Image 1 (cartoon, one colour):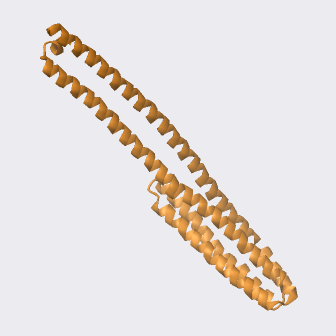
Image 2 (cartoon, one colour; image 1 turned 60 degrees about the vertical axis):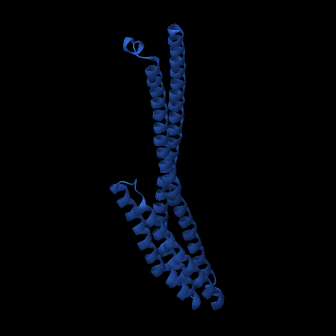
Length: 231
């Protein structure tokens, strides 16, 4: 510190002020960097991970509704109520389109997610493509057959078609459950990372702030002592 002692008081003040400003800049840069990191994780949770989970949950609900409508059509087959069957068929068609919309929405989230690895993206796309193809197969081999059978009062044929389609929906729901689990697990992991990053940032910022305050106090006392000794 002899070099600092040999400096003029004005120079000492300037150097001390520059040191304090440097510490404050370091704190500001660190805070902005950490805040950006926290915001990125938070945005990813809000716009990708959460939306994927919500989409799959909605898809699960839509598939259940779709199956319920098809079973309802079969139940009306012995009653020869063509009006009710046609109404249920229209509702099933609308539900089928809503399922496809959710599938496309999920595909968009997967393709737009900048944090997914190529392997994860490919795995998700393969799963969602399976759901899309399975839904088409289910519509052709179950929905359409049940609707036609119910319109002519063929209850047995309608029930047979529903039984035939059970393995399709079972496997499809398994894939949906897997995607829901993956999204929820990823969300929990990212929330933990977010909380951990925030806590660490607060601790480091507090430590740097305390260091800056202590440094400022030491410099002030040293300068005061130097000024008094000069007078």
